[in-house]
Each structure stands twice: as C-alpha cells, then as structure tokens.
Length: 297
Image (cartoon, rainbow, N blue to C red; front, side, top):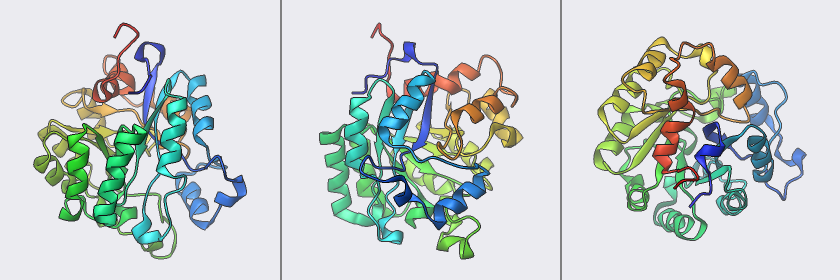
C-alpha cells in the first residue's frame, strides 16, 4: 500500500513517464524518436528522469505522481526500459510521493498475464499503463482479456492512452504507428465486459473527444485524465463536462517530462475551470480512485 498522505500534498499527477534507469548514462537514452517527441510537444530541451529524480522533483512541489514505463515489445522488439521491477522497487522507497504502475504488452499472452500477476503480488504496483498505438492492439481485442481479468481481480487501475500521440509524430509514416488503435470507443467494450475494472482514459482524446466524454458518462468506472496537452488548448466540451457532469471523474495529469506540472498548472489557472471543481481535478478525484487517505486514516 502506498504511503501517500493526501493531507500533505496539493495535487496528484496521474501521468508521468520514467525514461531513465538508475543504471543508464544520460546519452544512452537519446535518439531520433525522442527528438521527434520533444519537437511535437514544443518542449525545448527535455531531461529524462530516474525514479529517485522524479521523487525529488515532486516532493519539492508537494505533489504525488503515478510513475510508469511503456512495454511495446511487440512493435519495437525491445524490453521496457527502465524495467517495471526497477520502477516498482524504487517507487516503494519513495512511497510518500510515488505510486507505481507497470506496463505489459498484451501481445505477450499467457507469459504477460503471469508477469502482471507477479508485478502485483510481489512488487506492489497499483495499476497498468496501456498504449494501444505503441503496442499495436485494439483495447477490446480478446487477446488482452486475460490480462484485464488479473487487473480486475486485484483492484488495479487500467490507464489507456487515447487519441493522437506524440510517439512517431512527424516521422516518415508516423514511425509505423497507427492512430486507429487509440479510439476510446474500443475501451467502452472493456468497461462493459469488466464492470469492476477502474479505467482512466488518458489525454484529451483528439479527434475523439466526444467519444471519450460519452464513455466516461456512461460507464461508472471510467475516468479521464487531462495529460499531454496544455489546458489552454483543451476542447470547450471537455472543460464544460469537467465543470459539470464529469466533475468527479476528471484527473490532473501532466505527461511529464514532455509537459511539466509547472507549465500545466500555470495554464490550468486560466482555462475556465470552476473554483469548486479545481480541487477535485487536482487531488480529490484521484485520491478517491486510488483509495488514498490522510493522516487520520
């Protein structure tokens, strides 16, 4: 169980990437794909963070953060880096501010199911990140259902990338990545078939924002995170629903390090969100979703 005390933090960032292993030299992680990603986000010079670096960064801001890597071995042929185990073990050392997620490519089949089970029972992860475009699968592909069964059994949170992605953006053929996999309507099937599974639709789901709002409205277990975009570019209907019908189901997320929480929060202040809704988005909704409590229990 995480040691995050909600009384001691001001926000929970539900979407941050660990892109550097404690065993890496920084130059080992640079490459064409990373350069294309920073250009897409207009992020300037981006520093990759290890888990301990992330813990220090978020402690300074009195925030907690969900941390993860992405396992896309089916398309890349590479194991997730840093490994899920490293992220979980190090996050446990900084449990006052970090909530560990894992990532398992559904194409791993039965082996992936066993890996997920082990990551939950032996490493204490609290959820799983899926990136349908980078992993090359539709979320409602029955191939992934045994994996979801394990997640639902253990009360995990499933975080699905939705909409357009910076991964492959601007590269020839989009780096071979296909946007069709990340339509949130495919997650609607998952929510229907696994009603006890807690789900987050990541990002404003361009070009399927209305679909994402519809799924979150219809399925009680589905939430939306606001990561990956500056709030000043949010579609008007997303702000409208966050202020009203989905006020209890919208979550703060940055997509760090491509978008920093500092940049996100500065734009959030002027993005038309109601004063009474802001605390829900920044902390209360995520605290409830993750079952976090204050010092009083």
